[in-house]
Image (cartoon, rainbow, N blue to C red; front, side, top):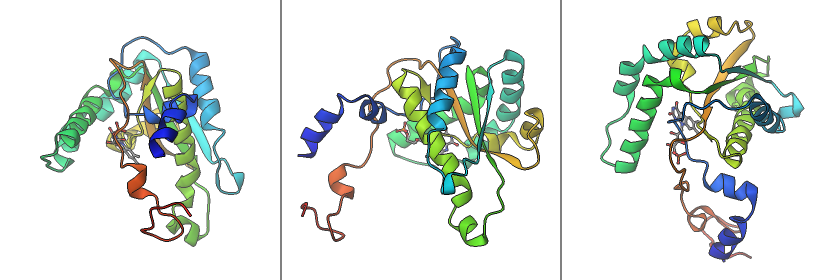
Length: 216
Ligand SMILES: Cc1cc2nc3c(=O)[nH]c(=O)nc-3n(C[C@H](O)[C@H](O)[C@H](O)COP(=O)(O)O)c2cc1C
């Protein structure tokens, strides 16, 4: 049943993109057309947000000088980042860590840097505790990743901005009430982008009661 659904869904653009939305961190140097970047921001801004407050702003960096400057800020933290990764014997986790390290060292070569920012909204404390402040922005970022994949681009959801420190918001001239939430490097992927590896539906789907595996 789930297999039938999977083969049906692979013929659908949205599901096809979701099924191959790997984190891509190595890019060809070719530029991405401005209209394509605008289309990605359109897709991102179709996302839902609490009370439709749309707390997002997108700062996109494509010019060589600024990319190099951002790249320097990020690469300065490369050793600290590498040391922070937990030791692992799992080859797939190790590959992912190597890829993440590569991105940090070579961030300045990323053709399109998208800094997904949020307005710091004065939510009630309970909302803050529940992560509401970021939730809309995360939805927008997820849309952007799927849209990028559907256009043949590679992208990744990252917190790379946290490595760059306070010089980055200053470089981007962010106002005091706007903060970077997610950093999405985007570009044409080097090589094939294979399917994502995720827990199977059968393992995570429960019908009516936790643990019941048959649809009722
Ligand atoms: C909330 C979140 C934070 C992440 N932070 C980073 C990050 O800072 N740097 C990075 O290279 N990848 C980051 N990733 C990407 C994950 O490492 C990646 O999606 C995961 O290893 C699975 O790999 P795959 O998407 O290629 O299958 C993040 C993903 C999520 C959802």
